[in-house]
Image (tube, rainbow, N blue to C red; front, top):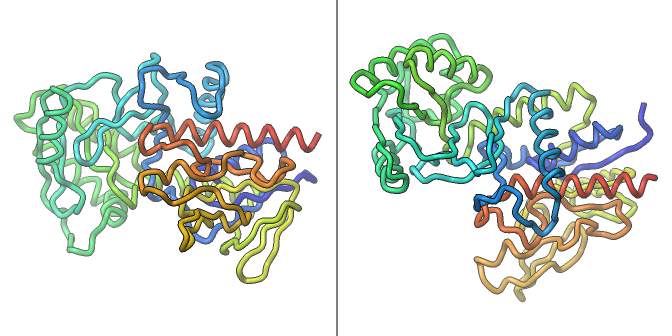
Length: 375
């Protein structure tokens, strides 16, 4: 058994990625988190950037070979817990479609989610009774933004539906035989009269455990490509990734501890609000961006990371929040307490659509520092 130990604070994408890569490097890992993390608010794709240059510069610079290796490792990791990530064949950045019809840059995309390097005609499907399904406005926006045709069809409410159904309830229903049969029959009827061959995009509620099988069946029924577009929180794509990923990590011996971290010390040690403490050889703070993971705004406008007792910026403008956070991965010095993910100040993934690159670059850099200290 490995003698190297690590603590990961946070259970979102950065935390899960850090945990998997620490395991691969021989660490015993304990994950500390107060909640399920942000994966349930995340569609599951890894975005790279908003320009057509797939190897644009970031505050943490990796060479093109390092980016290629990083995404290759990510594909292999996802495959290990049963999700196929699709990478673009060329250097052009592909786009996915949002719930309101905009085209959003992406890069590494789960095979259930729509992605294309060029705009194309699409069939948008709405489901009556699904709150985030606004197919008319979605198709109109896509038509205007892409310059391509956008067909729209609506499916009736499924049997047994009532007003309490949210995205999770829809997905659970479609995972069952009755739901799968209802969807196949209803979609086949709705597509009558729509030109053949045009890809279909459905709201991201097509099952939790059997999504890939369901989409294959629907493609065969409709005789065309069928995939999903992500909805707002809770994101079923993120829930699928979270559940499959965590299941694998638990099987691999990762310990998940529920609790709120109130302080991190350079030992490294994490102290919880209930009095428990945890020590390890290294600690990775993967606990979210500004106003997440211990970030607080004081009455005088200072932004303070309470976990490490350090001011990281000033609250001058709301639109400047993403500029604040840990400026260095080595957030407590010594290379044993490190920050990864959106907690890194200076990157703005909401603006630049490079959140996936941020996660990969910060986690890879932090792990390199851990290994250097352990030598």
